[in-house]
Image (cartoon, rainbow, N blue to C red; front, side):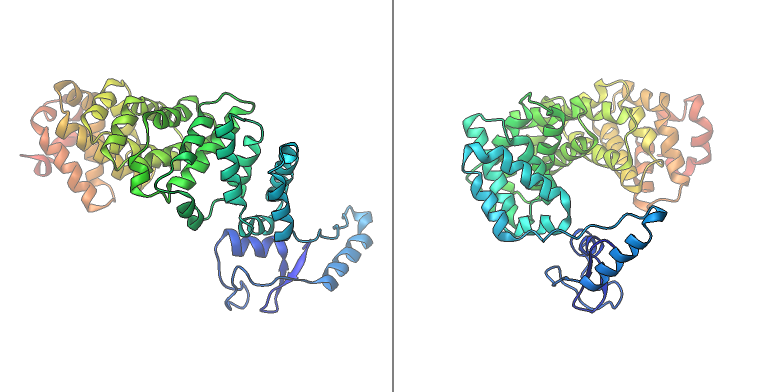
Length: 391
């Protein structure tokens, strides 16, 4: 322990550990007693235990043990409010933002205090003001602070006025700027957009503009950071339910970039998001046309089946179903044989997976069985499952 504190249940923990338990892991019970322990519960410093630990460290200094420092006083709401007030003075902005960023990075206790003091709203207003003035100084720090402290859902809803798209315009503007540390800035801007759009109303999502999707697809194209790519994918996924949004995504070249990302064999979460967006875009004719125009599209989707997660299996099968049902040209059907997509569908029938996925695979196989069962490369697979795929 470095900063021992005692909870209202009488148990002493290290401050960083118990705060992580309460604030980050969203637990509401004492780990030892299992009694209720709310987020706003008092954590009383255990000075006696801390002095004993420091004394032990001093006694064992010859063995390479460093003495733990006396903890700094807790950040209080009044201090955060004072720093927020300093943002109104242009000459103090960078110094204040740097200080706030350091405090936010320090520990969960500081981040909670900042949220309670209204810092998320202050940072969003600062970014909107920068957009209005065309000012780039301070944007990197403000975005970094928002990514540290997160934006409470209730505050996102309150801030996202249905009659005002200024925040989306501000973040879209940032995504289009080439500024210092632009990769980090764009990654953080995409993350903030993700947080905001999670709570945005349908009216806000229906008003998104072509430039917005061009900037988000630009994040995917530039492969800025892993965090940025996932945030951009989640933004697209939030906007996918509306047909006009899907059309704008396709026009921005989203399908091509999604396939290119997938060809790079990303980690599981990225693939789940990626195929989720691809499925929605393949629900429209323009999206399917762009999908089929990429030489590696069917192959990479088929390759993911039974190799990543049940969620990916679901999306991949639905994508292939959309292609076969609505865009099943002779070239596309033959390509499914050539890249072993049909063989993968046959394997799915024998795998331990959800029954509805097997039903969907059977439906795809039945739809073009006359063409596929004459292909030598899959004859044996289809023969063994003939009763399942016969028309």
